[in-house]
Amino acid sequence: MFIAAATDSVSVSPNWPRSAAAVIRHLGEVPAANVGDALQRMTVLDGGIRLLTGRTPLLGNALTVHVRSGDNLAIHRALDEARPGDVLVVNGHGDLTRALIGDLIGEIMVNAGVVGAVVDGAVRDVQVLSEMGLAVYARAATPAGPFKHGPGTIGAPVAVGGVVIAAGDVLVGDSDGVVVVPRHRVQEVVEAVEGIGENEEALRRRILAARPDSAVPAR
Image (cartoon, rainbow, N blue to C red):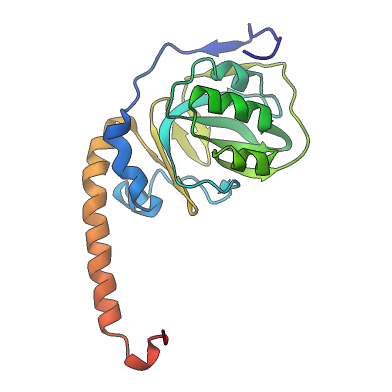
């Protein structure tokens, strides 16, 4: 860690499996909505968790963190466990009074190869996080910083945006929001999204073919 703080109150789960970038790559090339459709729309985070930075899309393996409201000690500790391609996923209890992630944590994320964060709570330094190339989703931004006392857990399942997320699940996000792909269903969803896109495109062609010429905008 880059801060001097005791982490006795933070528990860390043993290492968990992650999906290889080559396996999940296609999920980042299609709309998050299509990924959600492939999962019967059951693992889509609620609309209160929005993309706050300019970077999109988001794709990576979940590095899960559970913190006390307004306290980010466990997030600092979690970044010691991070691997390239991870996404920080933080249950901050929806608290909007203290930012759990800011530019300094952002710098550590970049060092570790963490591609973004999904926070059920607030963040700050949004412009700088955007300039770093991080995709950060949260409920709000606030300039108020966090405490660093703990407790917290790392690598255990967390509830974020109304969905339970396990370490190693895959996060897919774009400007619409975030979808969770359970790790054991990744291959199934990779295969399903292509068909969903093809069906939507076929329907789009039918709709456009039925449009009166007068409704077509001039070019």
